[in-house]
Amino acid sequence: MEPLLIAFLIFDVIALGIALWWLGSRVRSKFDEVEERHRRRWEQDSVED
Image (cartoon, rainbow, N blue to C red; front, side):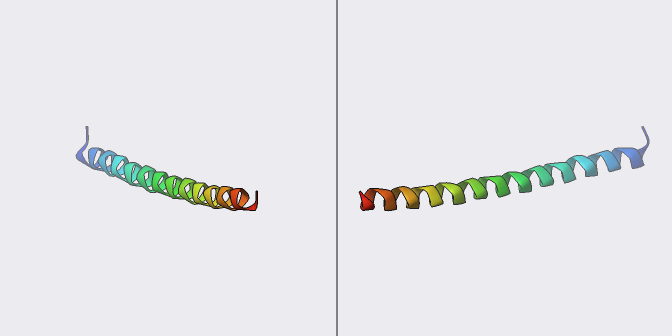
């Protein structure tokens, strides 16, 4: 294989890994926000009862 092609493939794999890591962290933080919102709502509902 040509060295330039190998370098390009390595770069693509690294870039894909970084993108997946970034998207995963965004999804996890969104889930944390939603869980926090639900927890606060449940606490308010239990206080109102």
